[in-house]
Amino acid sequence: MSSIKIIINSLKYNVGDTITGKVVCNFNSGKQFRKISIRLKCQEQTEWTDTESHYNQHTKKNELRTITRTGHNDLYNNQIILQNEGTLPPGHYEYPISLQIPEHLPSSFKGSYGSIRYILKAVVDRPWKIDMEDILDLHIDSPIKLNNLPADVKDPVELSDEKTVGCFCCASGEITLTVSLERQAFAVGENIYVKTYCLNMSNANVVRLSYDVKSKLTYKTTSPSVDHKYDSELITQNVEGGVGAHSERECIVMLEIPPTSPVYNFTGCSLFKYHFELTVTAEISGCHTDIDLSKKIYLGHIPYNTAQYPSQYPSPIGFLPPIPMPMPLPIPQNVPTENQTGPSAPMEELTPSAPPKSILSNDSNTDNQTINEAPPPSYDEATSINKPK
Image (cartoon, rainbow, N blue to C red; front, side, top):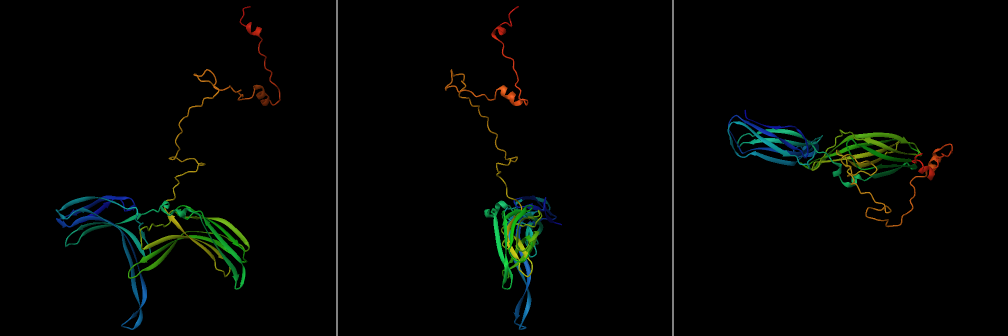
């Protein structure tokens, strides 16, 4: 039986990688074809069903009907011709393939109402007959680099809100909640440090301070009309103690982003919109509504690089400063060189570099005793040493 098969080393790649392998055709009889080709395609699609009311002209009644909403786009479509039109006798044929995955494409994704698929398809296109095909589904990762995000997401941010607490016309005081972030973009595996200040000047208690980060995904369909669906997923959360009436509290809460957090890159997509939201809630006792502070943040896979290092830290391997060249030692001005017959300036009185020995001995002698040294010999004694007796 005739067949066509794609042979590659893996089904999982990153954007920017090159898919290499071969297409193998086995023909048990001569085959006439328009072309033998391989195609790499990336497509986004959404779909769900809704019910809507409509007026039935025949029954003269309002009835419910089911409607299917869809969306579809090709984000990438690259075809390579392996063999032009012709005829091949029975036999075994192999065609090497090499396809690079562009870096601007999104991640593979499958959600509640849609998906992003990468399809590798080899075809023997035969006139007036069923084509011979082989199809592989690939999983492509598209890591998000924090360095590629807008520059202002590295800036710190502060949010604040206040609420007057009371029942009916009687106000008992205000509760103020302030939240600060060191930056707005983080990589999976990193920690988010949330500085929180809560001032409670009311008679009610703040039961607890709760923190969570959630993903917010919007699906879009375009046929028969534009419509949207929404999905949310918890990434991380934490809880801190409350604040009593007429008191205040300041704390720094850590939110750990798990390394396996579901973070997808939807670059270039028009049917998917994706962002993350940090929410801090002050839960107030009684029949009062809570205070919620929410801020859009960014999550990625590759953290900010640190190409520059502060001077107070040692340079890491690979960033060592160049070794300085040796410099000639300076020649003192009051020491003549070989070509000088005398000093070029009046000799200055030299100051000893160390105190006299007697001073050193006095300093080192704990009993304050002076060391007696023998006096130098006289002239007669010195000259009579070598005289024969």
